[in-house]
Image 1 (tube, one colour):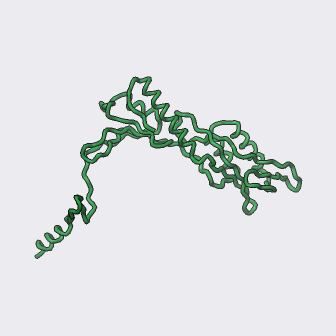
Image 2 (cartoon, one colour):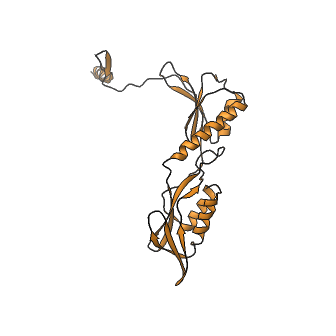
Image 3 (spheres, helix red, strand yellow):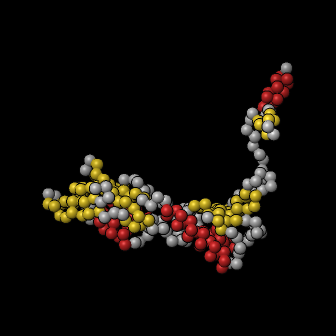
Length: 239
């Protein structure tokens, strides 16, 4: 009796196949068991990614592999299409480990100045922004005009009005957000000052609609192609 019940349960677990209009349908989701794959090496820098390819430690067939720049923070070395499941094996990858600035967040003045100085390349606009924000870090800042594009900030010490500063947007900045081997893309950013219950916070907002990603991908593609050319290795670099 128990054996019959178990046998019935096993039969119920089998998929039912229906053939209709030259197509086959199943009432259950089937998973294809593909060929065994290697665990890919993972690097945080493009230099390690290139070193692996140049050293040829795994006897890679450079005629069948391809390098794909998937985005400003990810690159993969892929093999040929599998004849079993039509997928590509990944031999190695590079994933950018740089911690990006949190755009759109409202950040306290002191913390904002620190992040700008440590997470952005030095540019004239970075120094202008740091100088302006630092001058308000120990005083009370009051917004007296805001037209959506620029702000005028009146800075006070006690009850004496010291000066009024106009925030001229946008700021041309180069935050660290892709691999360190390539030039960090410069983009326009909107800087805003907010006040809530007497506390002043600052925020940076992206306004290039993601163009920096295209620039970064092109830079990565050019950098990898240049390194491969110097090593006399012919592998397509797609981006």
